[in-house]
Length: 316
Image (cartoon, rainbow, N blue to C red):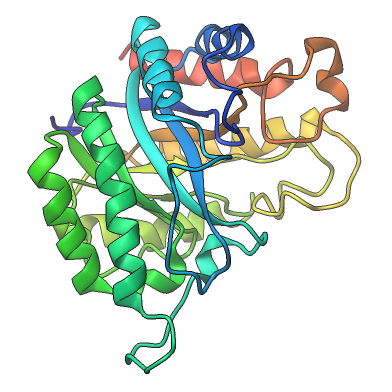
């Protein structure tokens, strides 16, 4: 599958889901509303497995709270029934709350210390398990990792993993690098698509797009933002990646961020879309939307803007 001429008008669904929260009537309604409210043509089905700490080397993806394989297959099937194309996006997180970007080990193996080789062995098992499910269920895209900033430098291990994924998955493969890291990944050539997290301050989009454009052009690969979004909260448009920022709820702030982001990206033909962040499996009641200060756009001004923009882009 090629993304050469396709626009991705996508929403990330389900990320904060824990085992037992998918494959429910509530989750079904959530995905139906995501489709109708945003006009999306794609979704990233996102979920996490937990390693204990940033230096742990086992990723027990089969354990709670990670959603079950049956729940993952249910979500993919539901998205397909809604005529959405699917990117399956398994993510590793740390149970102690440390951001996954800080998963890190010594570059040289040291006796009695955890090693990159041990971590990548476990991570490969995790990713290949879900790559097989992506193949079985016909997912159009598979994301092999998300915002693993310290691991990005381990190019040889990533290339080996990508080769293993290709043995069992026949669709499009990407990696979701973190914001500001697009030009630090040295192994984009091994992937089909370049993607990153677009949490850039509203006043900085042009400069960041200039920087990313050089990367995209040098590799001659399709590009889209695998994540992008802004909490509906005062101050968030300047720091859209800070989900813990203190501020009053403001759907106007979120809407303004989307206006700036869409306007800036519209002028760059190489930006082939977004998987906007995000839409939970358990939605808040719509009457609470004005008091909700999270990334979800349900019931907020940005939802209308997103639907208009996606509909325009996907019907060209």
